[in-house]
Image 1 (spheres, helix red, strand yellow):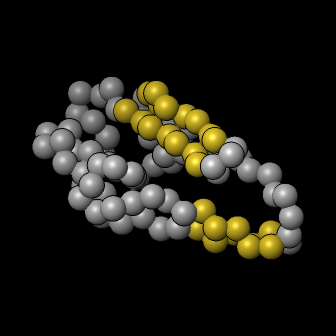
Image 2 (image 1 turned 90 degrees about the vertical axis):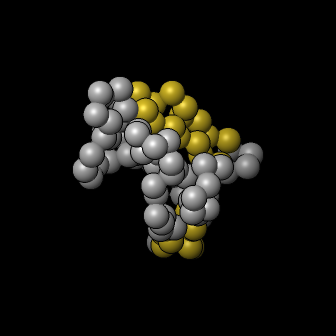
Length: 88
């Protein structure tokens, strides 16, 4: 969970598939505007080496990562950045 939204109705981790799912909803009348912390992930390394965190994203799709505008219900998320972690 993070600090951006008031409610996080979905927070789950599937250890078999390695998929983490997080969903946040703003209960504020005007929604959310600005920058903030959506989520914090605490993970435990199994071994030394590189680990890749891939964020599912397709522009203009609501299938994966989205940021939905309150007035239009459109996905306004432009891009996401994947993460490479070097475990030493």
